Length: 201
Image (cartoon, rainbow, N blue to C red):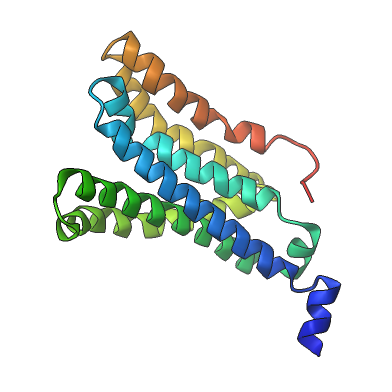
């Protein structure tokens, strides 16, 4: 009866909303990981974009920031800061794991390399994804209530994007337009999400 009453009054909504965010961001990871691998098969600037790391990582960070921004007031009230940081980390883990697995699985299918070989390629990236996800998730949670968290959330995409941007610009205008410009736009996008304003409820 108590659980039924909680559902009826909306008290069970926060966990349900969090589950929707997790499923949604994991689905985005699968789709974008597959898209990146398909782009990697196209010779030229699109191959460079598909093989890049920064833009795809930034998209995951943006999705996590957006999910944390659009939490309802009931979710914010029912969630402690530590649990909220855990949710941010879980969202990033869901995205990165889904992206890495989709990217390497698509490679195995297209190249008939076998999933064992694909797993060997994916495993190191998955190990890297765990600490990266925790850091990015915590930064995403604290970004809206902490100057330090906001600074970290703004600085990280720029920090990991600049080396790739500088690397591709030297390869000619086509790479600059197809790879460098989108990567730069994505890296600066957190400034829009973190601009002062009312949090969506």
